[in-house]
Length: 159
Image 1 (spheres, rainbow, N blue to C red):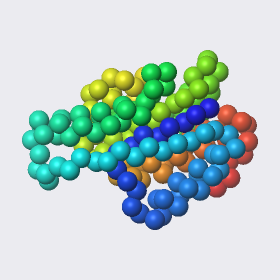
Image 2 (image 1 turned 90 degrees about the vertical axis):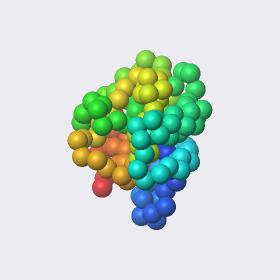
Image 3 (image 1 turned 60 degrees about the vertical axis):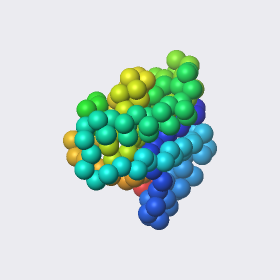
């Protein structure tokens, strides 16, 4: 299975880079993982709703450029469904069983995702009602993908 993470912004914090590298290494025997970072749009601190939509649309166009037509898209969104780790594992297993070879998980920037990206997504996933920095969310997502793979393989999860 191919798993893409398409996200806005470049990771700067060393601890996040190291954490993602560790889980990517653990995932390597099971899935092909790729991370695509799109640059975040420069925007003023206090934006109007119209300016925010413009930023979202520009970032959304860059995100969608990485996603092929046959890819199953899961958008991480505050209003998405709340899944357990087992639910995520079951979702991934079902997709793989029925012939979906690529899943793209999309993480927007600090202004969220565009309507075009949300419309393209077959699933919308929320990791809870708390707001997390999108860079930290990337690490949490990679860890949960690893956990889901281990669940699906019936293997113990090692911390």
